[in-house]
Image (cartoon, rainbow, N blue to C red; front, side, top):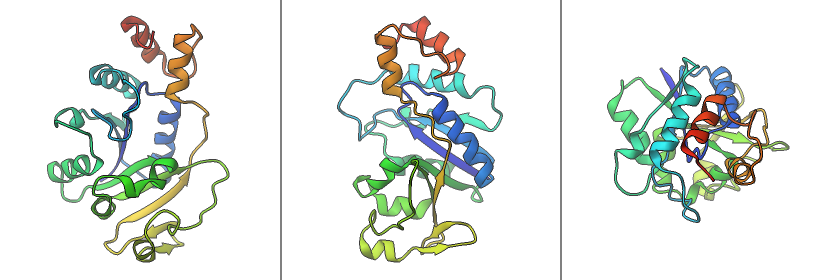
Length: 214
């Protein structure tokens, strides 16, 4: 089994997230993508985020009509900051040993991977799938990772990925760029503007019902 783990604040989840996940399922032959709302994101301390329960419910509603999408509240089950390595360990320890994990993240986040908690071990525990921006050129890993670590990854032309010393892989994959952001959605709501066609209708109804982002 090959599962993608797609973490994020999801405040709120939108079509940019959903479309990217669907494309990665098809391009990497993933059996499932699990959306994982962060309980306390370590890199987002500059603003107050919506309650975990509300963000989880919006994710649940957004993925409900796709049988290859799932969601997890695992990061609400741990105290303190939501570190990716703890989430990856949870899935590895609680599922079949043949489960392959593909950690899905954006290019900006991956460019800062060396600031992540226990990032070196994290790279060895799972594969990484980096969603690239328009105009991205594959310059290798030397501009992201320390020189000695980057040198331990060998580019594999057949699979178009970087193969690490412990068989972990790093994929850079272009997905359809939808210029949608959660912050712009929140701003639209605050200004009384429509968010139709930016998020699923069932999520819009939930936002209106709970009067979020007002």
